[in-house]
Amino acid sequence: MARTGKSAVKRSTLRIIGGQWRGRKLAFTPAEGLRPTTDRVRETLFNWLAPMIHDARCLDLFAGSGALGLEALSRGARYCDFVDTSSAALLQIEHHLRTLQADQLAHCHPMPASVFLQAAHEAYDIVFLDPPFGRNLVDPVCAALDSGQMVAKGGLIYLETALRDPAPALPSTWRGHREKVAGEVCYRLLEQAG
Image (cartoon, rainbow, N blue to C red; front, side, top):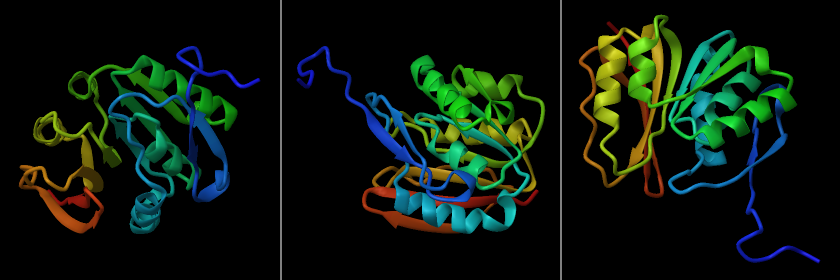
């Protein structure tokens, strides 16, 4: 008999859409505010990133389900740091990394993005920014990435925001590369030009 009621734990599925783990389905427990980037948006994003993804050093801030960082590793990224305030979400990502035999390719950091960025010392080739909507997190994190020189010259920044939110205040050294809208989401790929 199926379990029902509050004792049953609802599970959602994340599907890797390309690379060496293409088609793998990874279960995760949904949480309030967690909205993994859709398959359609990820497909577009990783088509944009195709020339840069191989051997890239990546940062998945506000990692949530880990969809973006896991997809990057599947497609040949060298390394990914996953950062999130939810220890439960990071435990699930660590489990997925072990399942995929990729735990040597990543590290999970249970802390706010701002704290991680203050302590980080190496620049990244690709940064994924998909913060919870409506919490005014985009502008301060973009400023911290810029002031800490956390994006390598020529590196790329993926930014996902709510369509109805005001346009983010981006650092002057970041140049728009691509931009699209899907439903209520605006997603951009930016380049560190300076």
